[in-house]
Amino acid sequence: DTASNPDESSYACYWDDTRQAYLGDLYSVNWMENTDKVDVSKETLQQQFVIVKNETNLSHVMEYGQQNINSQLLQNFMAEGKFVSALPRHHERPSPFHHARTAHKDAVDARDIVMETLVRRVKSAHTEQAREQAQIALEIELMKREHADKVMMAVSRQLLRDVAPEAVLGERHAVQHDCIRPMVEAFEGQCGRFNDYSLKHAHVLNTFCHYGVPV
Image 1 (spheres, rainbow, N blue to C red):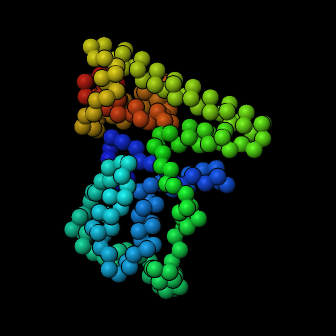
Image 2: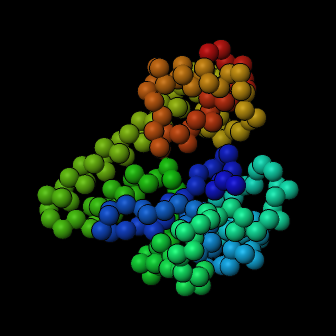
Image 3: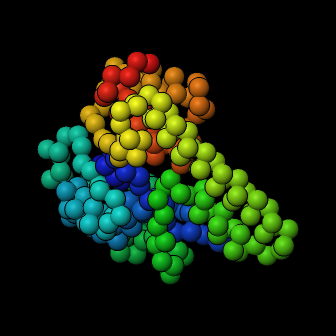
């Protein structure tokens, strides 16, 4: 199973003020919390998948692989031995996110985690110096994002002169496996490596492959 489809991002959630970080991924948290609260000797993989998929409502959860095992019980995939026998029964077991349950699952697109983290640090800073440092870091991050957008627009305009850059950014095509790896290497060699934000544009390189742009 995956938290999202190939054309979108997953979401981080459970911001923690003490650690100044998001504690989990929305899909993974939903999966762990479900496993914590159900009887794993009765719930099947398919039942859990449906529950977690419905709870993960900001991205499209996908199911791959051997689906003929979906009727098996969760307990068949849990650890055995002393570790499990020492655990409380499923209904007594505390969630690893117990302290975060009181907070809203303030989910944020994975592409925006760095920016949202810095925004929160600016707002929660206890000193003027800390606030200024966080503000500077935020401004740098915003400039990096703007630069990444401009670079991909410029490259699209240069390589696909007959297609509007805005249209290129929105296109999706089947992965061109023989082309995409060298295309990524060529792009990163000239324009710098992708980061968490600029990866949102990675699909554009596959569009170049689709149109037959030489590497």
